[in-house]
Image (tube, rainbow, N blue to C red; front, top):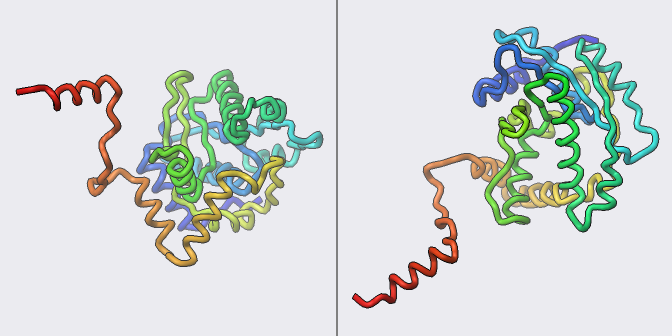
Length: 260
């Protein structure tokens, strides 16, 4: 396998790593490798840049079988990692059963929660201090829009998040990559992405957000860039103040009507 990254890919990776302080000396990084195009590229890219980094770090990968199907084969991914000199780990968790018994909760939330819990537990037990996920720029913008539309909150995931309970740090080195750029990355490493075993693939709230952004972009080419800009902290932000608690509002009422 030839190990090569075009210069503009290098630049995009280093920009995120340096701007958000994603990698420190002697980090032990565990990559969540699903077999999709994004996580394959992240594993490939980190295996290359570790050779050029002034801060030495280790990379390993973990694949979680969510037990959606009976024929989830991790052997191809193990071979992919072996060709990169990346240690490979595989584990299983019956996420399919957890979703089936989710008591009405959003299945994507349940799946994500259990995936993170299993990978976090493995990372702690095996001495990793960081977990790398392959979320890209489109993921961040879609998450931002979903938060606004479905929860009324202006928030998205961060490039780096420290988890106090475990001491782990989650990093997302691909936050400056657009999804359309990642679709062509199998040409670099030669591995065909595995199909998603998720029974709801393409039928999620995220897909709805993705479709909205694409549709709006047909009449306003700046929609995506404006959403991306809105994710950033900015002195130009003008939002209403946070709602007052009931006791605070009650006190303000009393103060307003109190006779002078």
